[in-house]
Image (cartoon, rainbow, N blue to C red; front, side):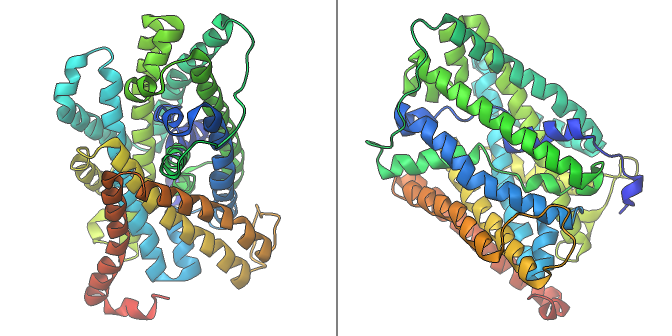
Length: 443
């Protein structure tokens, strides 16, 4: 592993772009929200869910990262706070959920690209594989190229969305109104899927810390960049949802045809083309950013002798974990045949379990090492933290319950997610058989 000083480091402006793509990448993927929540529930759920689900995660990440701004991020925090066994659980779960997450974006790319070339739907698998392996090549080049590409793609994503919002406001006849917030009439399963949709579009705040040693002045840079990225994400989501409501577009049309259909309705086919191009840029940027974060986890787990040694091998020229990147890309290549709805349920369910371990680690370290230096500290005591961290647990439980009651397909996806979580214990037992010395370090 090269020293921190030897690594090329990313600047804050590039970090904002990488964070934006890791947790959002623009509003693409938010389209089903209106069909689940309706006009009166969509903005309410979109406003409250990030406050209850994301804000606790952001503050937790900021405090833990200020204590330990190291490669491996959340895996290292949980291992330090709860022991090797739970650290392995954290790394394993996050590694698996990211495979699912990554599989979503090449498929979305093909859907948006089909706006230009409908024939691409017939070649979805080869196009997806091209995206997967092109992104692998970019990541092998290092974090700085990923940061530069993310900065460019973020402009390509945001510019069409801004044009759409401005044109919608300019062309709207009559007063600009906001539907009264209400959850009345939304059944429990639809409410759960609406929560899942928003949660998926706002997750991944911990993923951005796995390469902290490759960031200039990491504690300060993360604090500033995460706040800016969160505000940017929320403003974009709220405005695009409001525009969709004002346009009168059919909810099913928006769900099936995406925001390009909204662009056509607001400004004509040219705007639909621009929005579709933005969707393509979004999926490419998200994929590259998420692959950047997940590839560092098996690298550090390998260094800790919890995964095969080859995974921590660095490229001789670019000093990147290229074996880990290649392995991740191989697995994702086999995941692209799942449906979007199933991937969403699996993704958020497994991610939520890993995030829960980070919350427990935060409280554990407050009790275990209350005087350890924390350049950023959540202004709450242990009791206050426990009460505050109940909020994301409640959102998670309600979303899961709603999904389980929706359709048989959703039930199968949730069962697969639970099986994925249980696989961590099986993998851990196998590790103990081959590395018995870990039995004394597991708690």
